[in-house]
Image 1 (cartoon, chains in turn brown, orange):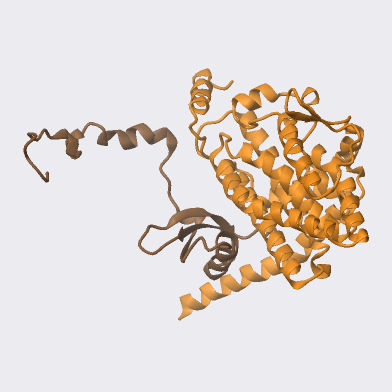
Image 2 (cartoon, one colour):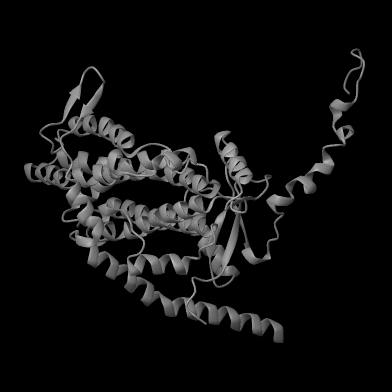
Length: 95
Length: 313
């Protein structure tokens, strides 16, 4: 095998308790443990996080931009999923 | 032939301020230019660690040493953000590093100058990082999503670099005559390379129209240079230093400083490889890569062994 820069891991950081992990970037690492340590060094030098997930980049499947229309449009013709679809008389409260 | 419809849609997207993401359609010229710019930027971050790393062991006290270590560590991080942003365009890091080592890819001309005294560490933070911030805040508004996001993050971290450098200079100017002279000497040596690192003047910088329309470049080199000079000259005056340009004067009508002629021959000569430290920088980078190879191989072998052990257990 020719020299590599080690496999890529995507990094997700939870900044505060109770909020979702957010994609921060990626690191190169030989295994999960090294990926976590590298992610800590690279993406949380200024207390940006309290928890980190690392995921092998090869394990991620993404939807493709060309299919954006066909993929997401079905939700556009269902306006009844939104609360504003329903007309409620003015006097009715807490609805 | 690139589909005109795709190109129109691409340009309309950019004009309306929507970012281009890695899997989106893009013209080959856009992709190529970005790989060139972004990898050059990434290389600059890691080559830039060398002149500063030169002073870590000789920082004048523990506070300064801790700060310099943190700054150099930041530069490594910046290099990594930029390499990974470049990788989204379909080139891997091994290939990018090979381009650096073979001389095919460039890095910022400024890092080919030596750091002769401690004051140079102040001058680099103040001037070189200062100039880089001017450039990078513009690039943060660029059209390529991964690059723009990396720039936002880098700019946030860079302002500490800028301020610690100015603080070093300020302390020296408040010191003995020798320390003052050392600060002035560092400014004398770093001033011109710093204003040159923002790139050739606009009349020598081709293809800018298309790059501006595609928001690969956000501002002309001269515009960024002017802003850098306007902000930096008063900072020098404030601490009793003088920029080494006898023709520098404020134009009261325009509100901008006017500078003397820039020695572009020197700039192009350094780019070509003839600066004081070009050979040393490349040699150090190549050695770092070669000496790190067994570590990467061992890490991969260890990871493979652990997977095997898990399978057996």
